Length: 531
Ligand SMILES: Cc1cc2nc3c(=O)[nH]c(=O)nc-3n(C[C@H](O)[C@H](O)[C@H](O)COP(=O)(O)OP(=O)(O)OC[C@H]3O[C@@H](n4cnc5c(N)ncnc54)[C@H](O)[C@@H]3O)c2cc1C
Image (cartoon, rainbow, N blue to C red; front, side, top):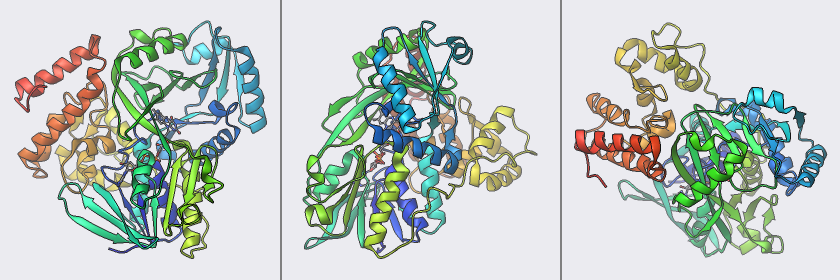
């Protein structure tokens, strides 16, 4: 296989680079070792930063975040909810920090507005009534799953190619030149070689491992953070604690739930998604200062992601290019004498587009393409589909989900639902997922409920897939889209994965939910073996 550029990594950064290059007319192949969004870009908080969080300690990152916040709200409307946000100072928080924060936000140009406790409580009744100062900021909620899937779909629609479940096992080298990648299909074991003029390493926490294939050293700090998902969305907007950035100080509303976090512990492995009970309890203790009822609310799961933090002071002397303090674009030709290889790491999901634009500029220049990036204007085809499904008889909640979800697939889906009644079946009640959506989202290759979850939200609600995984699987078998064996394997895998995030809580209502899930799958349906 041959192309102009191979992009390794199907997270926000890789997807952003892939689309940026595509819009410049460059031929590219995106290679991801698992499904799109497997890495940190789905194991994160979901906050589109306004920059206010970084205003005091990192003005450059704050400015970049604010600029990107404005651009992404216009260009990726289908994945962003303009919730707005609050920064809340509690009596125990430092007054001096608040003064510095207000000054810094004003200097950077981040619009903040102080509001009274009374009006804040009208909007956010769960907030601590002893709060001393509350500021409104332009934070928002951003869905990493839909965003990445839509970015990649847009690039594929424009003629480029994506290979998921393909792991880069080595870089193809000719003397000091990277000329491509050696890739393994993780399902079949087939090895393919893809030759390219440039290879972009956008593998986040895995970046050091991939660079090692070319004997290049990159110093990364992998920093694991834990997050908790509540069974309801109890805040309308993002709620931040107004103090020096710390653990357990952000609540982000995401669709029907609230995501709360986070922590920061350095780990050795890029995929150390382990969960820790004490860490969760500490988070809840601290979070109760902002939301006093927190411990009475039901957590449906916990999860963890690993921050890809770049740490290498020698970058500038060695000729690499620091895009900003938070992110690094490494031109390995200048830095390490290896041609045809570029690494982009660090930053935040909020700044992925900017990182991709800078990477695109470097890569395009190297292959003699002088088109500028257009991602700051070019809107990603969005998800809204209000003009469809009007004549289809469905419950309002189900229709509402489709209005906000179906996007470019709406026309086709509407036709199929008119032709086949069964496609209107609601398979997942928590998230109102229909069989039609599931079928429209079936990725090529193996039947995998995790892949379907990332595309439809199946199993993401309060029951965590207890009632929908077996239904989805049996309907898919009935429709001839998977064998019974494939479906059973997929269900067991999905149930085991969901349990990891539930058993760390293992008390109160979540423990009962877990027992119910185990009873249904391991006892009633006799699937797998109870662990
Ligand atoms: C707990 C937590 C909360 C966060 N909250 C926020 C937030 O609210 N807002 C925000 O802006 N940022 C947030 N961040 C930061 C943000 O999530 C990350 O900076 C961003 O998602 C990194 O994206 P990425 O594409 O660089 O990496 P990733 O998303 O990790 O993507 C890298 C991809 O490369 C793939 N890969 C690795 N090796 C190979 C290989 N050999 N072959 C093929 N593919 C490979 C991986 O499978 C992965 O999918 C948070 C981070 C954490 C940990």
